[in-house]
Each structure stands twice: as C-alpha cells, then as structure tokens.
Amino acid sequence: MNLKPYLFLGAALAIPFASAQAAKSDYSISVDHSDGLYDMGETATFAIENKNPDSSKTAEYRLTKNLWKTLDTVSLDTAAANQEVTYTSRESGWFRCSVLLPGERRPAAMSGIVFGADSFEPTRETPADFDKFWNQQKARLAASPAEAIVSPVTSEQFAIETQNPDHLAKVQRLEAMGYSYFNVEIPTPGTEPMRGYFAMPSDSSAGENPAILVFHAAGVKGGWCRSSLVNTLAMAEKYKALVLDINAHGMLNGQPQSYYDELEDGELKNYRYQGNDDRDNNYFLGMNLRLLRGIDFLCSRPEWDGKNLITYGVSQGGGQALAAAGLDSRVSATIAIVPALSNIAGEIPGWPGLNKAKTGTPEGDVVEKTMSYFDTVNFASRIQGDTLITVGLSDTTCPAPSVFAVYNQIKAPKEIISVPDGTHHGLSVPSSDLRKIYHNFILKHTKNE
Image: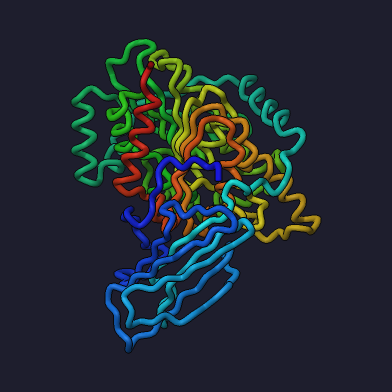
C-alpha cells in the first residue's frame, strides 16, 4: 500500500462517541492496524474488550460492508473479557464491526477498517468543461470588483459573542494584547455577500503575517456553523496571523438566535439540495464564490506575507477548504477534517448525496452531472499546496470511501490521519491529540523560511 498516513491513530485516541455509540459503554473495539488500513488479501483482527463480563447479559457483534450491508451477526460471549473477530477481503471495501446490546439504538462500540484504500476513485469523470466553468465564475468576480466593507463589531454583536464569561475574558485579554477584530462584508455577484469576522495583530507591518481562512460545518442555526469572534481572535494570536472566519451562507455575524432560526426554517431550508439539477443556480456555486472573495480579501491585505495562506475546515467546511485550494493556487496549505462534498455520486456518497434522485435514472444523471461541478473529488487534483485530511472509519456522514476517493486525486504533498473508531461528530470536535497535530501543521505552514 502506498498511502502515507500522517500518524497512525487508533484506540489510544480518546474520541467522544456522543452521536454514534451508547453512553458509558463497557465495550470497546480496536483493530490490529492502528490506522485501520489493510492491503487487499490481508486479515484484519477486531479485538472486542468487555470491561464488565457478565454471563447473564446478551450482546452481539455485527459486521457491515460499506454503509449498511450486513455480512454477519453473531452472539458474543458476555462472560469473556476479550474476544476477537477476523476478516479478510480480496476486494477493496469499507467494513465496520459494531457491538449491539438489546434495546439500545446506538452501538455499544464500533470500529472500522478499509481494504485497498489507495484504490478508491471518483465515480464520475470530471466534466470536460470543469475548468472552463470555474474560470468563467472567477471572471465574473473579477468583472465585479467589490470594496470590502470592514466595520467595527457592534455592542449588540459583542454582547452575543461574549455571553460566555470565559469568552468575554479571552476577547478582553486579546484586545488588551493588541489584537483587532472587525466585521467583513464583500458583495458577491448573484448571491449573498461574503460575511465573517476578521482578526489581526494591530501592530502588523506590511508583508509580515500569514493568513488563515476558516470554514464551518453544515447547518444554519447551530453555533458550529457560524463565524466565532473569540475563535477568530484566538487563532490570530496563536499564529500571529490574519484570520478570516466566514460562514457558508453570507449570514450576518452575531445576531439573535431567532435570526438564524428563521433562515433555517425559511430560505435556507434544505439548502444542500437547492438547484441540484442546474449548475448555474446550484446553492454551492454561491458558497464557492464567497470563499473566493475571502481569499481575495486576505491576499489584498498589505500585512499578508504573500506566501502563506492556509484554509481550514470541518465537514462541509472541510469540503470548502479543499475546494478553495483547488480553485486558487495562492492557497499554500489545507486542513480538511472529515470533508463533505466528496464523491457525491458514489455508491457510498459523501454528504449531501443526491437527495431522492436515483443513480441510473434520467433525473439522477442530471443531478450527478450538476453536483460534479461542486464535488471535492474534482477540485482535489488541482490542489497545489500541502494538504492534511482526517478520515473517520466509523463516520457514516462522510464515509471513508468518499474521502479516500478525494485523497487519492491529490497530486501535491499530502498526509492523512485515519481513525478506525472515529465518528463524524467525534472528529468534528478534535481531541487534544488531534489539536496538537493540526497546530503543528499550521505552525509549519505559517513560517517564512
């Protein structure tokens, strides 16, 4: 296998399982390759540990292929503290072993493996006019130059962003240390403006600072999908950088919760499927135009060092981070954590999938072709900067095959973190181990050497 994982991460990582595994489980599953990656024909071993053996209880393990195809379901010996399950595949594939308890909807434990990870490829060919289409979109932006509206954060926004006392203390401390923060809004043709928070060292000199562009996971009303004032400032301080944190939708910063609730229930309801049969009216077109505005803004700042521009994102934001790198060669490095929008037309599609359209039907073909213009798998081969991707082998939202299909297209220097028991939610909130890896990667790529 010629994959080059960045770091082998397995059972030693404390990854939260709030969304995929029963709470306070006595069971855990590890695999004998700590990255969960196997060559075709190798034998993988799942080690199932039961911390509280009790013969009066019942449990079973289930082995599944790809998303939900059950290969085997067998009763476990609940009196045993340790048991093993082995599996060999001579074909490439993604497999998960789960422990199931009576009456529990979520698995008590789960871990995944992949055979032949370097064999996953895009399901559809890149559209012949893919580059032409995106060059036309960039020409639209160039033909509509827009002055960035950089404005102070209002007292109302500040109050909302610093409701948490710890956030208030941190913002006040960083402000006292000499860090400035602003709203940024840039009109974008045919769609909502790019909006976000911008932070920087107040005493920056021309050509001094690296730049970081931050993207967020999918959604509208949740805190995880909005720009964060405190996080923008913290990142600016940590890396002495120009940091622009944008939301995907061009929403206003720091508004009352009702504002975001109304957008989610109204014009942004099911945004991920809006225009999925028409590339010129597809929702993700506007999203990508906004991220290009973000790149232009950072690169226009006189303080930018002219060399280091990092894109960083989780889930949908991971897809945006990769798209940004594929669309603009000024992106020098990228961190994409459990990236969405990956091989969307695949048998095991990345989020958001095709909605109700079915592969092999006229409707499905139209949707697949439309979404291929926004599929990360087609931006990947155009990436020129160093790239770090995290994939969870227990992630059913952005499944491993879709992420490896993207990873395998990247020709630039690349590394991948493969986590066998990593779920989408668990990896979206990085553990301390992962935070250290991301921190060191950013440090490496924010130095002028």
